[in-house]
Amino acid sequence: MFITHKGKVMKNKRNQKNIIWKILLIVFSIVLIICLIIIGIQKYQQKKQQEYYEALLENAGSQPQATEEVPEPETEEAPDVLKSLGIEIPEKDIDFAALKEENSDVYAWIYVPGTNVDYPVLQHPTDDAYYLEHNMDGSKGLPGCIYSESVNTKDFTDPNTVLYGHNMKNGSMFASLHNFEDQQVFEENPYFYIYTEDKTYVYEIFAAYKYNAIHLIYNFDLTNPEIFQNYLDQIFEIRDMSANIRQDVTVNADNRIVTLSTCVSGEKNMRYLVQGVLLNE
Image (cartoon, rainbow, N blue to C red):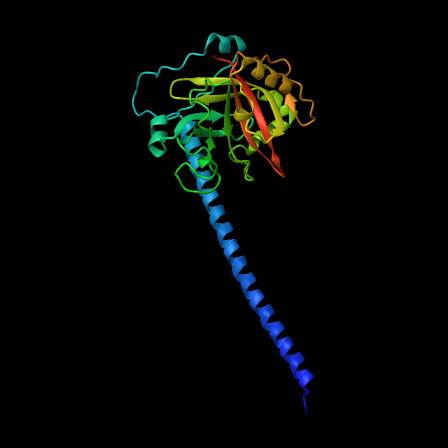
């Protein structure tokens, strides 16, 4: 049987195509394996960090067991304003000295009832974005940490202190702030708490809403009382159906607020903000 020149050419082309497809299949398989390995490492790292935070939380939420009788420790007395409102500060046994041994950038702890937010707060001295992609132990990757930027002082005396955290799919970090989209959760959990070595700050939540992903501190000079008041007025005028605003809470330019900021899934140009006004000045 004779094979024409044209037939040989076609056969060679088919062979070349088969080789190309085999090469592509091998390359695709290698890429797929690499991607699966990377995903696996990321998942392992996230799980490890979650276990680490859970251990911190367990220690912060429990009282040490005494083996002998010891004098009762002095507890922080609630200021008159908190007593008059019937607000009790949740007790936490936070060992800041131990936390700072692990990471000297820790300066506070935040607890938000109605959510999973119960974490240390950090601020890097030189890199504002460091804890966006670094963990408490300094390892790079998710979930990162709850942090503030150096534009804010660490004593919560600024007009607006902004704390950032990832919107993690597993519900960690600031993901569960989105619980406040539910009006019932918003109404039943009116306060959040920030613990420091010297004082516990109590904030009344007055707003939870989606907002443009702008830098709040750089875009609003809230050291100017008029600008601060206009900014607050804009918040109370929000009429978005997904927003929850407490119209009966008085907030003015003489107050200090904290803004908790996280991402909105599928909306990269938006942020979800939960804001509270300091009650115990």
